[in-house]
Length: 132
Image (cartoon, rainbow, N blue to C red; front, top):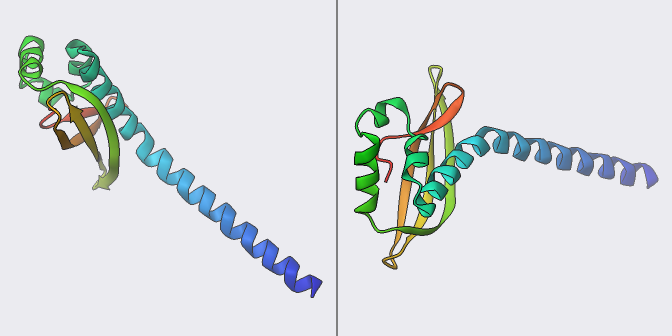
């Protein structure tokens, strides 16, 4: 009986350890992309368009001057708070990208579910596509 209990305890410990390392691996893969969007949206919430512009990927930044970007943001309802609700990181043929979905609570009272597209550029996640 003691042997059976010992075996069960060892198996439970192995399952728990495996689960921990699995979850830890997911966080390591998705955490930096999620953090990049957190920082980008926090810049928008605080009205720091210049800092948010600096978090854009090169191809998206080439579509706007800093001033045009700031004007575009000022024409939008202000973001009052946000919540990250989904993160997906993919590697297709060596090209790493991510999508991060966030609920953006706007000062208009509306909650916008926005999906941010990100790419790795110079070792950092940068927001691409339609940033707002």
